[in-house]
Figure (spheres, rainbow, N blue to C red):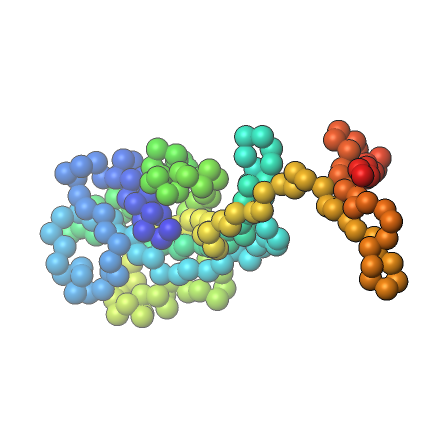
Length: 219
C-alpha cells in the first residue's frame, strides 16, 4: 500500500501546489547529491518512518456476507500503519522555497482525509477513510534534526505529514456451505448390535427462534 499512498500524495500536491509543468514532486531521500541535481522547483515528500497504529488493532475475524445474508468468507481485520513524510521545498531562492512550502501547507490543511479523487484503485477498494495530518508535533522518540543529520544535509524548514492507512493482513478464506440436511443417529445396544428402533434423522425446525428451536425426529 505504500506506493499507492505515494501516488495519492503526488495527486494532492500536484493538483493543489504544482500543476503540470510548474515543477516536480519527488520521493527520494533529500541528500546533498540529490539536491545538487535539482534544476526545477521541487516538492520532496520523503517517507522517513513507518509505525503501526497499535490503538486501532482489532481482534478476531471479520465475516463477509453474500446478497442473501449468509456468511461466505472470513478474513482477519487490517492493521493500520502511520506513514510519516518529510515534505520540503527546493528552489534556488529561500523566499521561493518558503512560498512553495506555504502553498503545500495550505493545500494539505484543507484535507483531513485523503480525497477520494486522489486515491488509486487499490486504496479506493478498501472503502475506508484514510486520515491525514500535517505539521503535528512528532513523538518524543523522533527528532527532525536527527533525520537531517542521518541524511547528511543541513536543516531545512519542512512539514511533517502523517497518513494512516490500513494494510490487509491476509487474504480472505472461504467458509463451509450452510448445513441443509439433518444428522442421522443410530442407537445401539450395549453389545454394539443395533437396537429395534429405526435410524432417526434430527433436523432443525425452520423459522424457529434459537431459544425455541428444537429437533424433529423422523423415522
